Amino acid sequence: MNIQRISELERKYALESLDGQFETHNNYRFVTRLEKTFAEKTGTKHAVAFVNGTATLHTALEACGVGIGDEVIVPPLTMSSTSLAVLMANAVPVFADVDEKTFLITAEEIEKKVTEKTKAVIIVSLYGLMPDMDAIMAVAKKYGLVVIEDDAQCFLGTYKGRKAGTIGDMGSFSFQASKHITSGEGGMVTTDNDDYALQLRRISGLGYGSITMKKARITKDDIQDPAYERHLELGWNYRMSDVAGAVALAQTERMEELVACRMEAGRILEGAMEGCEWLIPQYTPSECVHAYWAVTARIVHPKASWYDFRRKFMELGGDGIYAAWKLSYLEPAFRNKSFLGREKLMEGYTYEEGLCPVAEMLQPQLLQFKTNYWDTAEAEAQAEILKKTIRYFDGI
Image 1 (cartoon, rainbow, N blue to C red):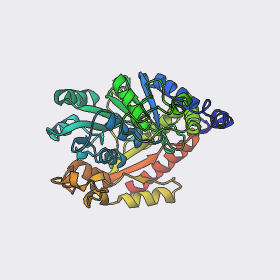
Image 2: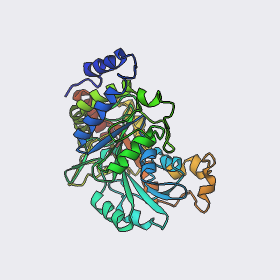
Image 3: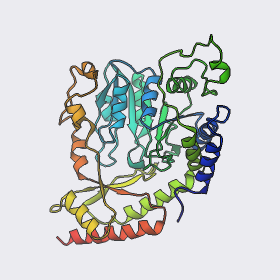
Image 4: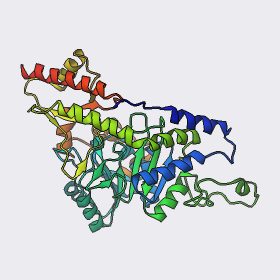
């Protein structure tokens, strides 16, 4: 494959949006089209656009009633926005461990962390792979928990034939620059629940009372009425701009080819590791289709370190290797409980080593190889460099 990440379609839509001069009757038309198209592509009833993929998670939590003192179970092995969104909702992140082979949160570990304060679970489809959703949904049903999918890295990934964003109560997607599709920044929440959809719109739109599931903006008739009461409830200004919506619409219309290109790169890079006993890629269960936001593997070489491998890979011409994020609860903000005044909510909670032993073992071992090669030949070249790197360390 050889495609453009940003094509003439994105440029065309962006210019059309700008040509509208941001006048009220023109503004938000591309976001409206984006939401409709995204819902169709994912097979969900509703899709609500946001300014970024952290605002999506925060609003999803608020929409389902998570609030002060509630607990939300999250994985520690992911970008910390997942748990930061819980703090933004004035709730407490409770960390559940992950599976050694898939690197994903499990139903068993979630159930261990359920208490009378637990209100919701955020699962993460890490690197493009969905966890065992049937088992997780069964635990959620048993305890009456809301399940939010953090699918920022999992566009068009599937579990037992069902797409990411369609199994939990809500699905959160990110359009940040590194993701499968992008508008520079942006995000989307999908849901089949009418009540959640309405709350998502209202909370992301400053709590305006005239906002409905189909009406995402107040009108001139609203604001030119001196008797108009704007704010039905507390809300945030998390709305996506129409220019971003124009770019995201074009990317959504091209979603299949953009995702397919990264999936092909992922398969090529993962294939280069075949037969290597000390480089262990993320395990993909047979019931899942991996979206390959990244190709990730554990290094367990008896003599070579993570840093040794990365150094040699780059010496041979490799593009570089990313590390897995430091576990969220081991970041300074959590260790020191520096939560902008929310420290009072965390009384009795301790964030320290030992909370999630499997995640703590995995994190320093994980090598993340990027897949955003829009020409398959580039991925093949990187795969050859990866093979040379492996052969070098096989000889040590």
